[in-house]
Length: 284
Image (tube, rainbow, N blue to C red):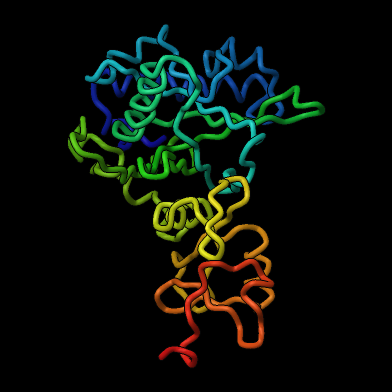
């Protein structure tokens, strides 16, 4: 990390940033970040619990966040439920819903937002190796979130190249100047302007929700964002696997209002389409 970027962090936040940088260096010296044994992650305090969000209260991250919730250190993505949430350039990480007393989940939620507000990197851990015995680790930045779809957008990058957080919510704990996106010493310039795969998926789900535009199915495991032909880089629609295949086969199209239109000569009933718009030439 260049000294100018590090200098943008002050007090306890600077110390915590430096601590995470040190953890990353130790991980690399231990043979990481790919194919690491779980016990190595525990020894380095990168991860230490069987849960999706790791805060590490013993590291005194409470003092870094004024709300006392701490700052998330690591996110675990097992890939068992929604493997498509992980892409080469980022991760959609679901809000915690563990069945524990609600206060635990809320603390982890706040701590992860704090990582975004303060511009602190998190370690994203995925399962690797034969029989899932090893772990791969990436550097992630909490770039955005949506309470409506209960998910965070995590962008992958280098530990010395902060990616701005654009997440907003009522009662924001920290002013914009405290977020990574407002650092005046180069953090903003390191962010990529292109729309990433993870960003496209996140924005499409946030815009349309978890519901197939053709049939109304709401099971997240069966849904995928689909790019609309002729649209911009962020234009997409949510379809289930069957109707996504029908769209690619040309049996369905999407009109300018984002509604599903069944191709002429094709039966909507045969395709299981229950939410199709009337094609323009058939409207009265």
